Length: 262
Length: 361
Picture 1 (cartoon, rainbow over the protein chains, first blue to last red):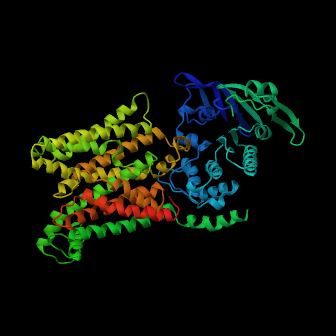
Picture 2: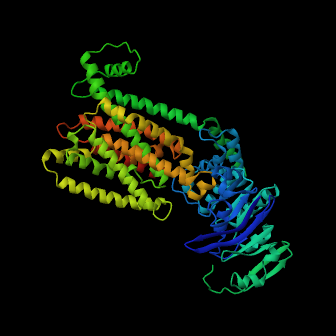
Picture 3: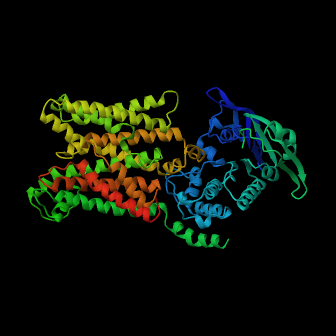
């Protein structure tokens, strides 16, 4: 589906993403993890074609992203941003409808099918009762689900999400991750930047660990996350053990060392 | 889950039935009726009072409809040759400023943006002031509008060039450079005003800076009608793109909008629209800032509706303001640019109050 080949992104000579190669297939649920400032968000933007790679190429269905029109990319790839602030008083439904933009011609208006997709996406994210509310009156977590619904309404084959559960309560964190998991099982490709390593390990098929712009590990959660990695990349002492209750690894930090990381 | 199903049936159905185009048609029709009414009244009132029916009849006959109403030759000449061109220039200028303002507010993602934000009006002011100061106005009646338009072109070109140093201009850079440009252009205008050689020129400059539509002819209408209508139509067609661009550059890009290209196109179109308008009217503030706001408070932020309806309301607003400027408080001279602020200011404040009470703002 999507393949990054040795992609780098540099600003003023410093490489924020440095020669990362990563391939994600349809049906996969991949988490991008790493400490603050590692380049996770930039990598996600490179995969979505929002930023142009300084070197290397990103290919979507074997076609280089730079050679594709934004509209063509947007019909296949949807992104959910980290920052969801908005100063103009659109209703929730209007924002979710904007997800249909790449599928509509310049003079088209949304038809019954578009509205059906929008209602479905809002129901999936439990925001149907907010449909006529103004987006400026919503909480951060509610806005995050609105933008996720907008992405779903676009019917993408590839979903790229930047910390989609950062502002959500526990119930909605699980609901959103379960929804993404179901989507990946329905043959979508899902790439998600996550900070919660336990949830990442529990839900993702594969984890890509980014450290200082480089790919520091990629594979099944149990293969990527271990105590040595926690010490080296996250600079924290932690115990990584198998949790039989959830059949996956669980990470417990031991020492809250103040090292500039959160 | 109960609330979910309720909202789908209660909140979803009306939207399905009334499409965006139906709302657009409804509002456009209502505002067109308003505009027609304002135009008829504006053509009827003046030193020579003409009955509304006669005013309407002259306009209808002029448009090629046979109204069948009898009116005097004198009334016909007053409406057709004196008032109608002035009213039409006012309507076109009002529409251009309102559409330009709506576009700028969306492009800058800032409700306080207005058509002159990147230097159009202040550049036009320097051009027009220079034309009056150096008496180019004696050469041809087109010297003033030409100098004004060239002034705005120079100003926005310089702003764009400076903002483009070191890569594609960001909107924040454009805004900053625009502020700098407005300040320096204002300074040049002040120098020319302070050094105006005689009363006549000083008055000419001050009047131009306060905006005015007197003595506009059919030639003025012909000069601006095409660029303004084409410009307004062009921006209207990008309504959905403007909506998506309000979500931010990256969301717009990932929703399929070619952001740098669309933004450059609309920024140039909106600026030129304002430049054309100002060249035949002088500086008229407030229309471009307030009219889109009024529309947004009443019918919401969807730019597919907002842009064309702002144009129609802007047209009515400026024609009405010009009529008040002509008629009210004689012999006190009220310039139309002053009236737009006098009328628009309180109207705007009332709407803000209402919106705050309803918790929208």
